[in-house]
Amino acid sequence: MSDGFDRAPGAGRGRSRGLGRGGGGPEGGGFPNGAGPAERARHQPPPQPKAPGFLQPPPLRQPRTAPPPGAQCEVPVSPQRPSRPGALPEQTRPLRAPPSSQDKIPQQNSESAMAKPQVVVAPVLMSKLSVNAPEFYPSGYSSNYTESYEDGCEDYPTLSEYVQDFLNHLTEQPGSFETEIEQFAETLNGCVTTDDALQELVELIYQQATSIPNFSYMGARLCNYLSHHLTISPQSGNFRQLLLQRCRTEYEVKDQAAKGDEVTRKRFHAFVLFLGELYLNLEIKGTNGQVTRADILQVGLRELLNALFSNPVDDNLICAVKLLKLTGSVLEDAWKEKGKMDMEEIIQRIENVVLDANCSRDVKQMLLKLVELRSSNWGRVHATSTYREATPENDPNYFMNEPTFYTSDGVPFTAADPDYQEKYQELLEREDFFPDYEENGTDLSGAGDPYLDDIDDEMDPEIEEAYEKFCLESERKRKQ
Image (cartoon, rainbow, N blue to C red; front, top):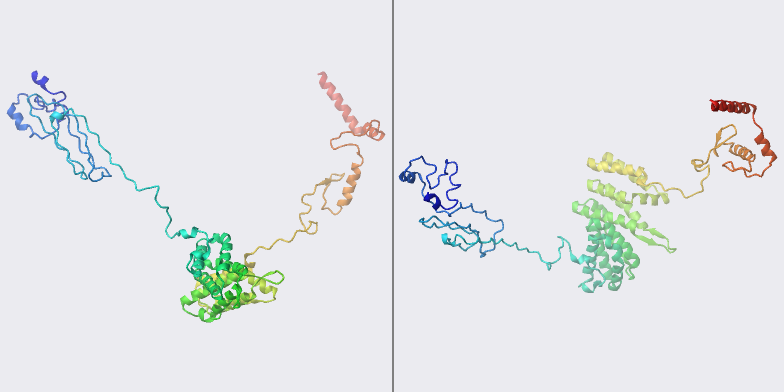
């Protein structure tokens, strides 16, 4: 009896569940009745160090983010219950700290069983973000493109570096042309003061327009603007004249370039497309202020097409298709004004190439599509004729919204009928019989009008008979 009261509260419970009644406690539960101490000692497993009172929980897994080296990691310890009187104090199993910690947790004995559990210090995640971090720019982006060119070329060692920087800027941001071209031209007027400087400017623009395919259109616009706004005009020629001279240098070797190697032909094709853009964008003002295109470029494009078709390899034919799609409609209109049939000759030559040349099937298909495009007037929609006053002769829908009238016999007629005037005049005469009546039937005449009184008093015999019959029938139904 005293043995049971000396047992610590909760001791022996929850251990070795499933062994039978008693749970295998120290009182002999789980052994047959009458088992002596020796037998119990033989069946009892060897003692293992354990925390008194409760089972030690399994260790927690290592956290994903380890604390910084040198930090102390504290692990909570379960409170211990006092052991039975006479029992030796058991030492608790030492708890191992996480691998990142170098400190060891001291062993605790039964004397500190009632100590308060220690708090776990969670590791603090350190962020590298900072409000003072520099601004982010995507790869390939240069902050120089966002700067304005108001400072001019003073910040550049040479004029060529300033011009090349601006050309690269237009290549990356073509939308800034309208806002920055004026300042660029003003800066050039202050910096380009010699023949050599103007020649260098022309060469830089030409090389940029022919080496970068997407810059041919922007380069042509730039050349047109500078040709009208650069004030320098040396004896060697102004900007437009020097530009055309530079193009003529490349034009004179067109036959050799069209038959050259792949690199030479590629450079020649870039020149051909740039010359096409120049023909469309370069404006020449006449003495009377009339703006025209450069006729010399028109002649040059015709000869360039001949050079391309004379050597009908795939890349030459593709370049010819691009050039005709770009300038075909304008060239044909200009040739027609002069009474020339150059476009007919070009189309005939294309058809011969499709039949005879050993080009690829895709290139032949492109040539046939080009012929189809030209047959549809280069995809242009005919402009509507100038405004003229609508008449029955020039407008088939002239009478669409006209009202419909009816004759005395109930026959409808409109203004489109040949005898409209006669029928409409008859209608007006019939309306004259009721001059003092509005559309709603209001009598606007004075009392005692003999004509209207005669009309009101008269009644057709059939109507009179029907009216009397109606009155008799109504009276008979009322009396029933």
